Image 1 (cartoon, rainbow over the protein chains, first blue to last red):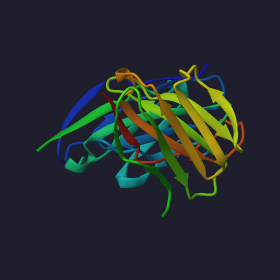
Image 2: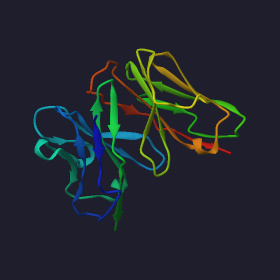
Image 3: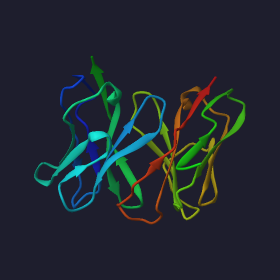
Length: 112
Length: 115
């Protein structure tokens, strides 16, 4: 069965620094992968998705993610973090039956 | 209105009350979902509706009763809840079907507090 692991519960970065959030998935075939962001008290917003083709995908708000099949990873990156990026980030993999399997989330704190 | 809307945004209820949460999607989708998000717990899928048919009930207690009258609307009827049911309830929608390619769009959630 599909599963998603986000090894970091919390990450703190300085404003302007680069960011990488880790995501590892378990799935036999080519996965459909997603990153969502959730601001406090809000719903989840899709940042980017991967389903085929170029393994480096661009998303909204300056985020990108790279799919690495050999490492079963789909890490999220941003070259320069802004204070408004502070939020919780969820990685997810598509599952048969029109469902998503979510990781536990990573809370990003940005210090000025 | 665009996207996925949820009402009310906040709800406080006693354990003996009956209330309903409403979700509406304006995206032309055919699948809708209820999730529960509690503090310090992973997102929990509760129910899935595909083309108005319930296709998933993730062992949810019967005090939660979903209703999907059409592809655009989804309700969650609540009765005799417990304090541990306090959480953020999220609604989502997507294209219908059974595939693994499932881009879901989320509403802002209803923050439920059970006293």
